Structures are given as C-alpha cells and as structure tokens.
Length: 101
Image 1 (cartoon, helix red, strand yellow):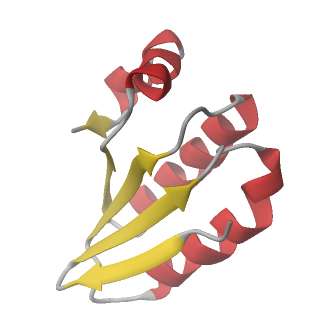
Image 2 (cartoon, helix red, strand yellow):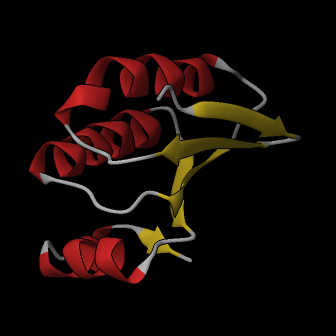
C-alpha cells in the first residue's frame, strides 16, 4: 500500500502501512520526495504504527532518506515502532543514527 503523507505545520509524516520491504521502494521514494520538496516541512517523521516488519532494503531506504533530509537541513524521526521493527532497527544500530520515539 502507498505511504500516506500528512503535513502539520513544519512536521511531515510518512505513515507506512503493511510490510516495509523492497516492494514499497518506488512509493516510499515518491512520498518522501514530496516531503523533502516541501519548504515548510522541517521535520520528517516515519510512522511505523502499522508496519509488522521490515527488511534490509527498508533499512537502505531509511538511510537514503536521512542522508537527503540532512542535506536539506531537515530532521528525521522514526515513530510508533512495534517491538519487531524496533528489534531490527536496534540490531542494525539505527538507534544510534536516528531519533526513535
């Protein structure tokens, strides 16, 4: 399913639904580009509330988004991570590279 984009003031949220894997690559890139291109958005939140799991390609997509956001001086936060998602993020040491709420 395509990520849902929400903008509230300076915070843009990408709400993911379903497994976050390579099949979501194109939709994730397009949705994230929308938030990157919006000058009002200063913080990008990736919402994992409805994500049961993610794979290594998802980790790569998150790293690329963080790199692009940082280049534009935008912050990035991962929110509402389920235990299974949080476990994968911690194994990959993403908890040291990202703010996770």
